[in-house]
Length: 290
Ligand SMILES: C[C@@](CO)(OP(=O)(O)O)[C@H](O)COP(=O)(O)OP(=O)(O)OC[C@H]1O[C@@H](n2ccc(N)nc2=O)[C@H](O)[C@@H]1O
Ligand SMILES: Nc1ncnc2c1ncn2[C@@H]1O[C@H](COP(=O)(O)OP(=O)(O)O)[C@@H](O)[C@H]1O
Image (tube, rainbow, N blue to C red):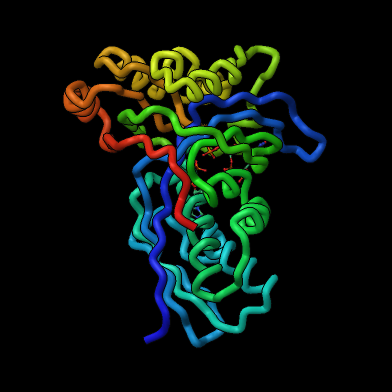
């Protein structure tokens, strides 16, 4: 049997997401605070002697061809560094798909980190993040994990300290949301911009209350209008007692920050009454092992 590497691919949430303007290249200039959570896909990379890339996944929403972001990551490394061997990429999908949690981007990032080892490429983590940006805007952050301010189209990463430990409840409505559609329908003259500096300060001070008052996401203005059920989940989560409630990324997943474990069960049970996909996990906030 050939060499095998196992890599964890954690999801992210956006504690704050601001869009500054639309750029000439069609992308939007953003300023976001991203952090990793303890909800992760598992990626298994098995060396193949044949010169090919295969994707194995039991999840019917995960493409098993070149549309898969993990496939694209492997192809990019293979071509750029003239690797003659192949790889079988097996994805155990835990992160809900098309949810605003960067599941696909994190699979791609984990594949980059894993193949760097499997193929002995010796690339630095910064180089892997740079390569990741060619696959998608969120991939660079996912290469590092941790907590960061992301600017540019999301690929410029400045690491900051982790928020104080807390719980994160996630509820994913059954609808899927296209990130491109959400950005396209954003009306920047009608949004309320979050205070990112105040969020950074609150994180720096380990001020959980300050973090809760400063969560904000301008993309909510689009997705909540398109899908009123997302707002319904937000209101329910607030009613059940989460300390802060926000949509992650372009949605439709809504997350709640919860300081005390004693409250978790009640919020979880309440949401499970009308939403199939509910998760209670810890906020990780620390960097991936490279
Ligand atoms: C909204 C965010 C917030 O973290 O996450 P998700 O909801 O996808 O998790 C990201 O900005 C999404 O990043 P990602 O999903 O990697 O986007 P990409 O594949 O690069 O781009 C998908 C499409 O979204 C639009 N897009 C993306 C990023 C950006 N800064 N401006 C844009 O306008 C573009 O139309 C692009 O074609
Ligand atoms: N490894 C992957 N896991 C999940 N989805 C993937 C993957 N590769 C490509 N995709 C495609 O990317 C789209 C967005 O997926 P995902 O990364 O889960 O969502 P988001 O960008 O909202 O965080 C999906 O519709 C799916 O078809």
